[in-house]
Length: 554
Image (tube, rainbow, N blue to C red; front, side):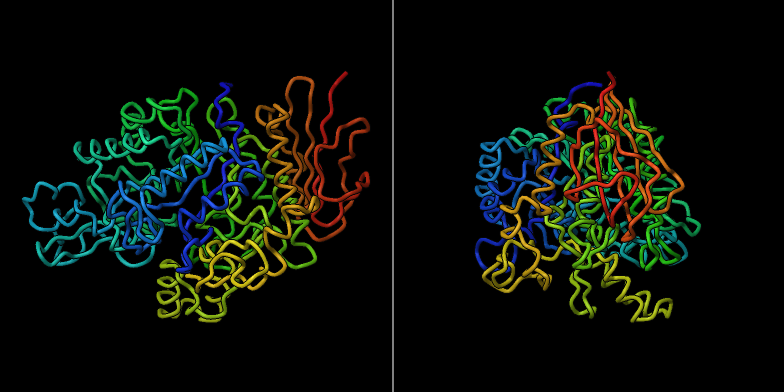
């Protein structure tokens, strides 16, 4: 395999609004990130993926962009960004920007022009269609609920928005749209950034006949087959690669909901003609129910193992994996896949980290994951800020499909605001995040879970992550070793091996709070790379125990 730097890197995702507030307005900002660069250097991460910081009216927390080449007022100025970039580079940390080019804000100058008249030069920058029988052009639904079409009274036509109605989709069929986007991307690369995380990048190419969809199970409902991985998507990304990506030494990852392993081999093929890697969501959707993610179904371990192992084995030698448990759109990993009770939170957080970081691929740590931060479990819809949580709550309870009590419980388990509560820095007021009133409530467990109490504690979750990150730099087998799943049917143990030449790495993880008999013995002369208990007992796994042992053939 090619030795690209991003293969041995660990990426840390920052959600700026919730990371660190420097000016007391209750909202995290760029100067707050600058203050915490030494913390990130101490952790040992290589790349910071920063969620959108561009100018935005904030209908969808910055994923609705009104100016791609300016900074959101709440976050600071372009001068602040330049200082952040320089400060990160001084510490040998790279910066990956969040690229949102499926849609803009309806307040972007392009859309403001586009909606003025049918013959405006910018009209074709977006997707406009005439009504059909006085109604929407087709039956597609938007990701946040409701129709994917919005009537614009001024011209009597509908525009497409796969997300909020304030997020009109760009028309990627238009050559000039693509040219202007590549121009903007090159501008950021010339500024010195090190890569792009590409938001919903698999949606750029739509089927141009815009047919009605049957009821779909995907994230985009009945529009899924016509908007995900569309007919020209690889053509567009190869063009983007030629015009921008290939000119710089970048890390690129595409958010590709609905992508299959076969499709991922095209997006992230090793010839480098498109992207370095993609985010797949198969494991994140495993416990979905009849109303999508709004359910309390547990995550079935045999299926989780099957999905993650499929991506490990089928991409090997063909494409590169990204590894993650959570992000700004997913609930907290320890609450979802581990056990966030005081008794088991730390040990299960370490177990999950071991399981993921010993696989092949580039690991992504979401802010606070390295502390074992948990879901917040709000008790009222009034506490939520996320448009997806709020819209789905009123749509599903209003139609009688889900009771209010059940929906609040589902939001507590799967809602996006679980990941967006402020970062827990210390045990002072508001967890040290702000001197003002935080934009979203701080998790009340910050007194027990915070960075200040963990950074100098060698047994903390933070120190455990720090060790995992350093192991990746020391042992090539973690990057290049061949993966093989063990005990595929076991519903409590996730075990696998990595093999490289004469070396073999055995990883065993107990996903339950039970003490288990383990059919896998520990190698006699192995080197214990990492474990989340001080002592190990052959043939027995303690609750949420994780062990990684390296052996070498004589």
